[in-house]
Length: 100
Image (cartoon, rainbow, N blue to C red; front, side, top):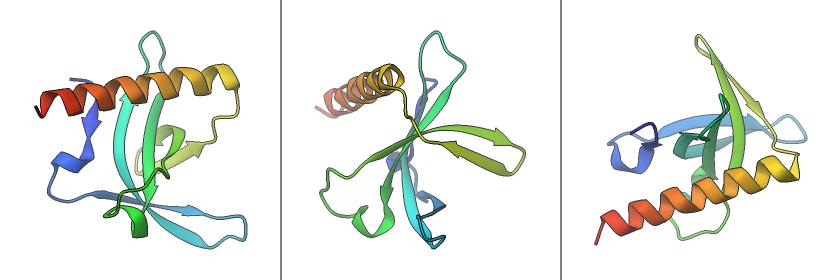
């Protein structure tokens, strides 16, 4: 499967994203995926302090890896956001369906 669900691994993947004031905030990567027909890769993250709680606060980023460097890009295009949201929801439904 081209999708990775981090929650199934022992060690969660943690990334640090600077806020508007330059302070680094800790996030847990909950899913990485590619959209069919595109070279773009996306990751869904939740704030680390909320990772163990039920929360609706999930952030999506397009990302590129260059060696050890991770570059995150905000999704600002409405069409791109709709595709990412639909793909994420479909993957979550598949994961929830496979648990039954």
